[in-house]
Length: 386
Image 1 (cartoon, rainbow, N blue to C red):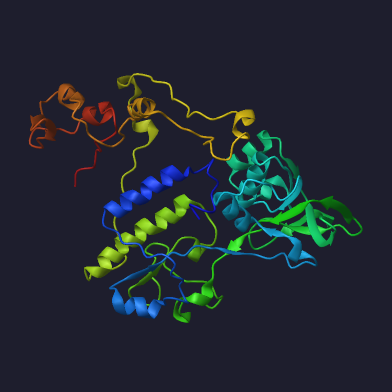
Image 2: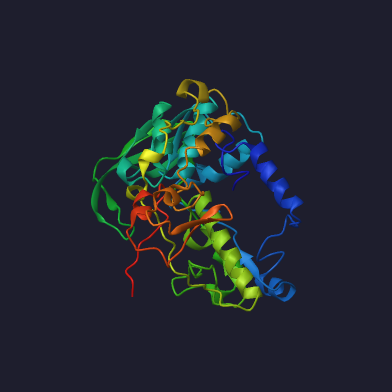
């Protein structure tokens, strides 16, 4: 998905290549062109390895189930072709059906290719599952959105597609919590398009894994805290388990599963229960000890600039110097940096300076709380004496 599903203007390939090179240098081995359930299976992997993690994502595109759908183009396939070098749009006037992140990538890519994309979505903007940032950028780019519109039929005439759309209204919420779209009888209208691209969601291919890790509903069951499945030593996570989400969430699954796998290999409890970490609130920060520095904003290309190229990154971000300057704004909440404020303020000399850091001498501390009140970063906590 990182290479073929995310447009280069969002994730430059040179950045991805660099990240992969780092993994290779770490000693991680890659085996390509291996399909789970066809070339390899979980049982054989379990024999050869002490632990297995399944993170194959959600790559099966959902179908609309309407007449004439065979004339449509898959959104994920379209993005893949573009990533492989395709530069000609499938037509000038293109309908894109959907409201998620893939739909946003498709319409914004089409615009950069010189097409006139029109988004068709069966609910309103409030119900769109796409990232709000992507929706706003698409609107800034000048892309036309048609809400409460659903294709119900299509037919091809010569080199055009006649799409029959019906108007919708919102009814009661469905199981997703979003209001269910209800067709308005008699509101069907035909419209001519050069092409139609669908991006109504993806799901995982669960036919390639053992039935033991599937729940009664047919979905993969894996502990959200560890990624552990019902088969000991087999872990799973990311979009494969929870359905389409963000790359960051998939990274999160990988991290917590890796930690759980390490505990499993050591013979420890897979689920490690730890006390919650102390969180320092903004109210505990003593602002008078800090110099005010305004936040820097990452550079962004203007809409008129960014729609000119498929390759130019639209969010180039900070330079190295700007990034360092922004890092220096960090308060280091809850982390002692040996500033010496507590040592200076203690009226009873109960705070000693040992090895360049403060330590409390409880034989002399009377619990006045001045050190806790003055600590710039909210590190010191006062407790009732038992």
